[in-house]
Image 1 (spheres, rainbow, N blue to C red):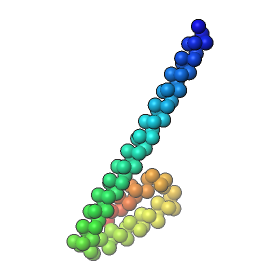
Image 2 (cartoon, one colour):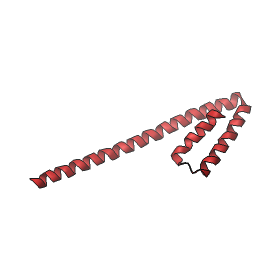
Image 3 (cartoon, helix red, strand yellow):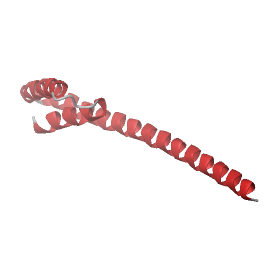
Image 4 (spheres, one colour):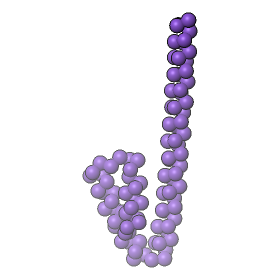
Amino acid sequence: MVLVRLQREVAARKAAESAAEEKVRELAQAARAHERLLGGGVKLMTDILATARPEVFQKAAKVQRWARRLSKHIKVEKAGNWIWRLCSTRWA
């Protein structure tokens, strides 16, 4: 009786772990998709700005270069690098 109960608990725990791992994979995939979407939007706006006002774009490009260099020195995780690029584009 106790052995059967333990086997059921082990099976239930394995099923829960498997479901949790699948959810983590789904969330990671969604995060990558959102990052690509956001990056594409920022790239499009940057391209429009470069066409409309090249002098502003040159300043923004300089700030982006600084942000990239700074992020390497302070060891920002790869996942966090996009926020530096976005902020440097926004505040240039």
